Length: 388
Image (tube, rainbow, N blue to C red; front, side, top):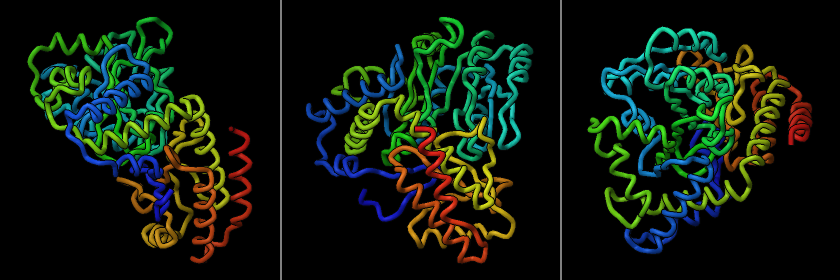
């Protein structure tokens, strides 16, 4: 990779040369048959990744736009949703719901823990919910949701499952054809952005609807949206030579290349690789007295929120690492200054992560916190090879 820094944050994530090359290709008209072919291929690749029987939407926008697109096309003003929140980004659905007059209830876990499934069951028994939102992997806490436990409970109560897959898509299973204990118990909507585990620069909102979710859109009729109304995008997704809004031509080039790399590696291989990354990074950093906020049983494979040992100045520590070419993210809310977040997803390599652990150890030693860097690297490798 020709990147100067190792961008080990929850997103954007490292970009490989072939994606850069695609991004730098000649900008063509959005109606040019050569671009239309690439756009159509990208849409088909996305359908293959999600294994959906419905429609996918790849459009200009951020992950927040994808969240809005999922909500406004399925839930009307006055209807009710339940937000299952494992951290800061799960809470964003609250503001989105309120903006469209949707009634919102929230089940919020302690940071670093999962929402109790029994609490979800109890809440769904009390009221009529149109949909339940789940953040698959929360980028503030590093907690991954247990879909095998949550989806059957939600579907049993007749609600749509809206999955925010932003730091999970292409790294943790999100198979929309999968039945969770019953033929009708499936994920209805998955949304993500281009800049996380897919490993493409920011700027694309990606959303997948199954047939059940598309039927709900038909039943709603007129909705308070224009750009995010999927009815305006379905003709374009089926035939990208048609026009609704100008697509980001070069980002689509990059996305098609990113999706090619995802599918070429194979989804199962990616799931295994990311699991190994997550466990190995957390094990290596533990040798420095750095503990993950989320315990292994609930930890995401794509990023980790790591608590500092006593006496580490967050800004100074990450600033010194940045000088060495390792970019980490600070933590959020009440954990600001007490933890950092490290991404280990997408195009990130084993060599990059090993180098990061070495430089983290070096920086700790330079600041007077004596650690055994070699032991941490050995532990990283041991766990890495045990899981691949």
